[in-house]
Length: 360
Ligand SMILES: Cc1ncc(COP(=O)(O)O)c(C=O)c1O
Image (cartoon, rainbow, N blue to C red):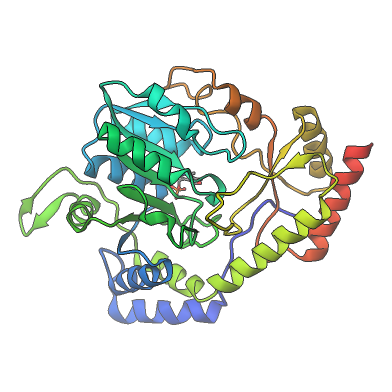
């Protein structure tokens, strides 16, 4: 059996060392020493000015919307994980969908202005599969219309664009450190901003809005993460270069062996490089996708229709909107297995199967 993804686990004795420290200190959560250490090491690794380690990538987006006082319409992408839209609704805002660019699969920046109304307050866009959005165009639009920009960078760990971290674009970026992600802390998330004042506000929001002993500065939430999760993050971070290298090697192997497969890869931002988070293909047709998926399922090789269906037409709490590009792409997108333990031989075998199914 080959799953679509499998979490990386560090050598158990290395994780145990962190656990020993936790047992000695008996400090389990609430911004403990391991959580602070992870924040420092991640700041260095990602080359960002400020970040906070939080509960998960979903809470990170909610906190961003709250910290920026977003209350009206939020322009967003229909081609993302449900959390990108659900957080907007959870925060009492209204998602306004803008269709994607069928090449990059990210929000189409050239269609954003047409969706702006007097109620628009922010743009919340996803760097799909880690592929940076058109951050330059979005910055120009945001400045012109006085909008805040939040990037859902759940997939974009370690991605750079124009030589700097993709997380440094926009007002706030978020990341998911969920077990299925390129880099994980079991459950976890990051919130990144260049603005020190905003960081201070976010830090309070993370801790119930507590401003000091017996005082509250604002509405907050429990966005903290634990020492156990930080320990997993610290243990994994030591392997991140190796993890990325292996996944990029497997990615290249897929690409070399699928040149005659009737599918294309998302077009990556020209000033950036793949981080190996996902191996997604846009197949020629939905019928080919269904044929391939079913045949691979039978061989116990699991793939994922990520993202399908469009968020603009599948959520019971959002008015359904037709998004022609997203609707067409979502039907044809398939993510193939990609994880650290996957071997080159397994990738070649998957490619052979794909070609055989296509030609049958
Ligand atoms: C694009 C996107 N946004 C947000 C999330 C939510 O992250 P988390 O699972 O850490 O809450 C995910 C998680 O899969 C995601 O893929």
